[in-house]
Image (tube, rainbow, N blue to C red; front, side, top):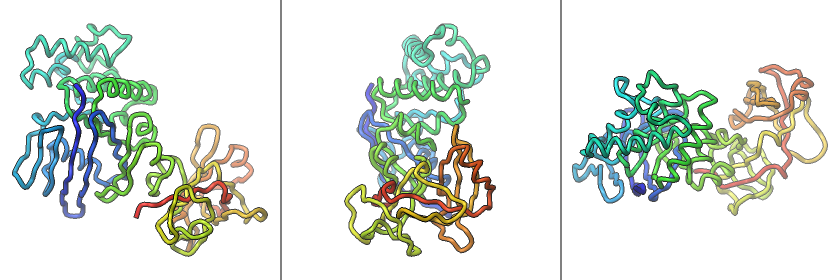
Length: 370
């Protein structure tokens, strides 16, 4: 069964928070939802799944309206045609893998034989290379965490949902199980042409699994577009950080970008943008040179920073900046990647004053989220 289209426009009010979002997905499309903690990602999934009732709006999965506040429509979660795969597998502990996966179809009225046949096929699909009959007879306590999450995926797909909600499904897996599960998710979702909404904090998950990315902040969409475009040309500091890039916000000026405190940040325009419009200067941490004393020489962007943290990055070291006393807030979180030898030569500790320098040719200026 091919996934169904999603069309949702909802508003949900809380004491100190309002979710106000319009979200859609084409049949078979995977949309990743990114955002900082408290941005509304879990609230959005709660509304789509039917666990939360919005104060206003409408949600349709395919041709079925599952929520319409004005019309008084609120289809219960188990009748929405929506599947959910969460961080934890949450399998029924007293049931075998076969019974867990067959549960959804059985609850929907599918005869036992047909439901179990569907479950066996899915178990074999999500656990390739293993004895499917043996795995089908195991209870959750007899499986590894990665195996449990694979069975949970089969259970979410068994009722053939029009929409699959993926709530950070890889977050609880260990480092060895995560790549295999990510590849499995991609294969199974693509083969089934399954429509899915993926909530994740991982740029890699979004890049591998999603066709399109939506970024939430403060309960509203601040950035969206094709996955590659959003991750290579971020328009918000949050998106830049998860994409592993540095971002300086400001407004477009003839020589690049002018920050809100008046600093000129030189760079090249990556996209058409009018002078005075909100803009973002984006560059990789690997393009940042680091000095103990202010550098001189070729024209470049030179920034005085305080070293906030030293983070290992494989065979390099990431130096994370914070503003010096009285410095602009946009310096917070800027990063520079240096070799281990360069870090040793700098001989610095958190709290030290450093200079970050970036050549203008390494900086791309893009439109920014307003």
